[in-house]
Amino acid sequence: SLRGRRGAKGIGDKQTSTSLRYKHGRNLRTDPKQSIKIKNPEEWGLPRRGVNTEYILAREDYFFVYPTNYHKYLEIYRNSFQHGGVSLDEMVLPVVTLKGKG
Image (cartoon, rainbow, N blue to C red; front, side, top):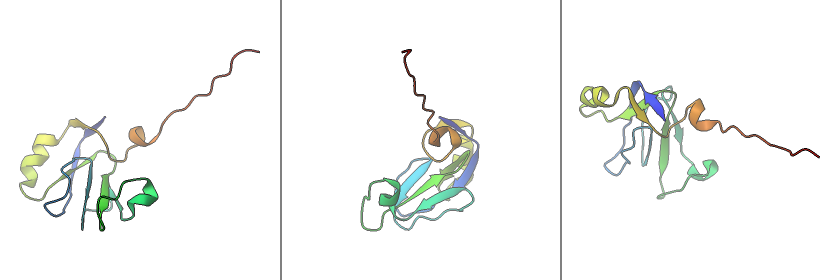
């Protein structure tokens, strides 16, 4: 989980997913400083949901808000705990190898 502190405009068509930390759909637009855009999902191990499927992943403590009623939803979701996106906590998996004595 991550505490979403900053809003980023995530723009897409009506078929775009509604997640706060990541979106998939067609012709997605957002600020590259606030997100990562993935045009070839297979290269990232993500499913292609259609011919022109793209993904955007929120960086750091950003979350996506639609431009319609931007400030209203910004206040609703600011400081809420969210899953998904790209943050250190969500991308790094600690691994330990244990060996028995003898």
